[in-house]
Image 1: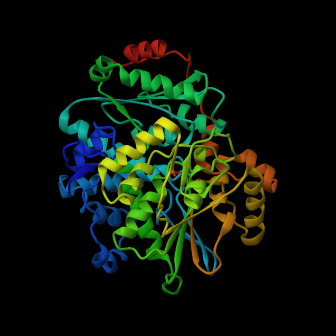
Image 2: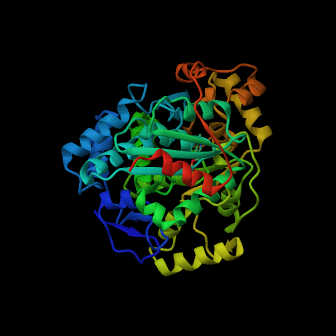
Length: 453
Ligand SMILES: *Cc1c(COP(=O)(O)O)cnc(C)c1O
């Protein structure tokens, strides 16, 4: 299998190179050259464990990795999950199911992709002998999931910038209490935008980038989307036969990576009838799927911070399929959108999509409601999924985070704070963070002094 850029000006490449590359040199995102119909394998795959299923799926995509290497990388990645099913499906009632994606080390669904990505990076370092320094900015979940994907790995340093007063206390502890000496959390005296600007600035310094082999951990890496396809299969295989007639996956959405993976899985033969794009009050995607108008607004902080996004970085991949692989059209639309902050589609096909949105007040009400109705506690991101369920269909809700990560909102909504052993353990650990001003120079010097070349 080869991988192509959504902008058409990058030579096709193999899986390993695509994973190492991240963003395509022409500014586009990488995608498989075709989405094969895998449905002939489903009967057999239904009997596999999660790591076996993941390996079977990736054997169609990571075609340049030796089979034993792929097996080893996948096994390691899911060994760190604390549930035997890895992604268990919980029945709430006869037509409502929750796919729990929070059993990984940081208790959010990003672990599925970042554990695997970390293990693929490790393999790459082993093969090339070249150390990597990972640099990124986070407002929470991505940073901690990336750190836990790379924790203690030989040949990797990881520098994660976050706004000093802008991440939840437990999220900070997940980043700054690891005790691993290759992890360097940097609490920046500034906003998330300041952090991102510094990262962009440092990546723009090509001499620095080359000397330190700087690598990004952004949400656009091909391996992230592909790894997320697997749990849609796992969910399907756990659904009772009689519930599979008309299935809608409901996905709390920010950067459109999670839901895109499901949609690709549908294209590869899984008979999902529809997807619901669940947004919070930052509802650019809700507006797009309702009206065909894609228009940025300012980001408003919400109870579901990992969905506080206006421009969804994975949207370009969807656009590529939407425009039938016409890379010139994709480039034109993206440039147009970048210049004007909006784009109106004349014919926007939303055949298998619909959208819903939830304000902070809705989120609190839903958490209380779901708790009362099912005795089940959802986190604020997952709560957005319940805003507008279709009673005519089987709803599979993607539970993207463990509720214990958001004690304040839970306290407000139901008057108790759920706990998780992994988080409790963190509270006793010492916090090691590097406090720095919002200055690219200071952080450049810190990287230079930390990494021994
Ligand atoms: C990242 C994240 C999301 C949004 O997922 P996207 O792939 O960016 O759409 C939703 N919920 C949680 C808990 C997250 O961490």
